[in-house]
Image 1 (cartoon, helix red, strand yellow):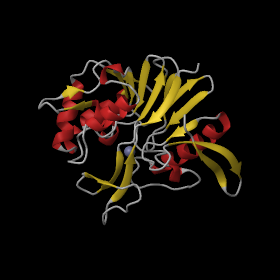
Image 2 (spheres, helix red, strand yellow):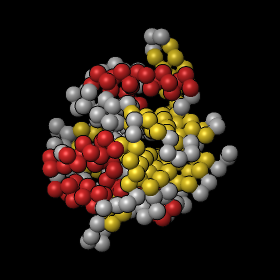
Image 3 (cartoon, helix red, strand yellow):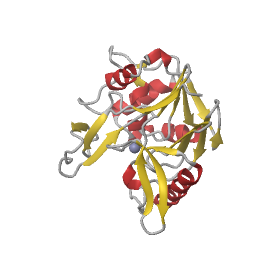
Image 4 (cartoon, helix red, strand yellow):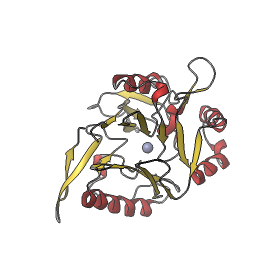
Length: 264
Ligand SMILES: [Zn+2]
């Protein structure tokens, strides 16, 4: 099958302060004092008439430098309209990974991709619902709107709800975090959300305080790198600035994996 291609939909690099506003900065800029530097890349997988997204970007939930038009114009560059997105898989239910599912550009909430099935972890969804009041007002409103969408489909621990797509619960960053896989012949992609959020996660052993379960995250990070290398998956890294899709092409016991940018 030659009509398969994958594309990062780069939304920008941001300085993210405690107020949760995403302030746009250049790729090479430093973040503001006390803030975190973060890039955002949902991924588009094109397969014939199917257009699949892995995570949905920021939407307009994160302040003035974020807008729903970002993901729409990124898709447009690949000739994909809002109505042509068929499936959206969400790695975990943090708002910076799903903000693009709905917007209120015309003053009321509406879905961004009217024809798309939105695939999420049922346990993750229930947990978010139970804790929704801990989130910002705008996020609560957004979630209440998502609850009215009949296109949200629930998934369990490990499932393959449509051809060539698979989710596997890995936990770690959030309790019900998924690794997302696309596999079709020699087209093999793995997206592990914030468990492997950037190239910098490769070849490093670390436990991060921001993870729900830092040890599980660390364990899965190691297992997934090995799996990507052994089985030939290209890795899609949602928060990576320079080369959001890369392959692990070699392994040295001392230096670790060799990383090579992947362009489809
Ligand atoms: Zn994230």
